Length: 214
Image (cartoon, rainbow, N blue to C red; front, side, top):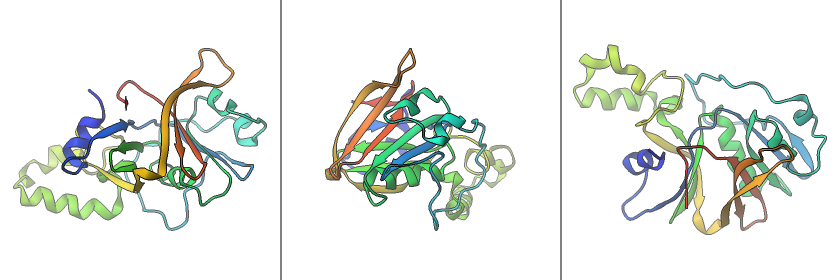
């Protein structure tokens, strides 16, 4: 089962086709912006507040945090999944990294015929907690709340069937293209999705068995 099935159920609009969809990586986000390496990439000020996420992945290696490399050696650090590369902080790949960092390893991306988006299960957003409780009450499911409340609230990871929402998105015309690549110096090489934006910035992300990449 690919993660795009959840997207079609909860997130896509009529006529919108999913071209790329990635599952939660449960790893860190890193970046090189204007020559400065930031590992992990910081959550931006004023970002949406999250709750209930089980952060179970390890911290990055000292080699990666020190930034003592020139190319894509970050991929040899298995604690990193996402990497943004840009000339300045206002580029789209950096904005995507900002949004990916919010989810503490439980975010993914989607590229459709209309948009590029960073996705997170709604149950992790503080702003959606009351909305999800209300939806359950309206469906007459209060009697099941004790046993099933974790389907929406408090469960620590992205599960099959979770309702997903965009935490950041842009029109697809700002995406130049994407392709699967092999990078790093260690063997076997890391399997990574490369997304190029029109503004010249690049976002890399490790791929997994539930990912869809056309």
